[in-house]
Image 1 (tube, rainbow, N blue to C red):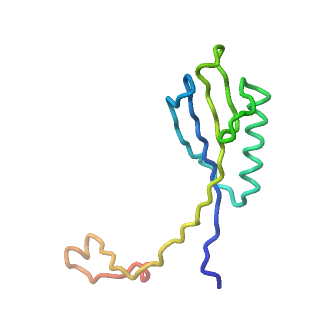
Image 2 (image 1 turned 180 degrees about the vertical axis):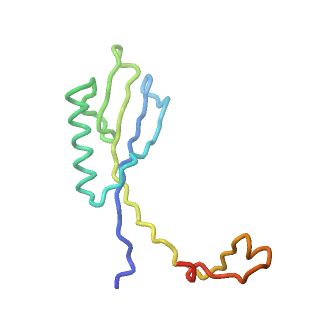
Image 3 (image 1 turned 45 degrees about the vertical axis):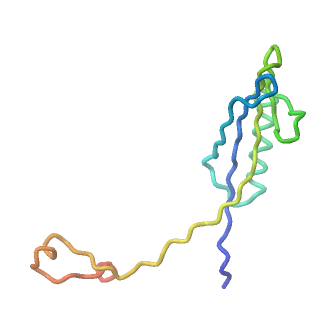
Length: 120
């Protein structure tokens, strides 16, 4: 039995605004979708970039640290987007313990306590 838990993947989107070549705003957002395979996350990013290139004013970024850029008319305040795939280890539920569970009657002393596993 392998002790390694299965990994899942998430997309982190970074939005950065540069004004006169200085960073003035940055926000990192996690896409709420979890992907079982890295290739699924990669396909989502490719589709997102393709849609933005086709349907908005974003272009492929000349900066190597960002994927897309949207220029202002004066090109002094530009918005950059970066997509990254992050790996998350799956959380394993803790085993159930035989912890006493008391009802209102049990707390008042009318009947004895039962454990959670005895109740199911």
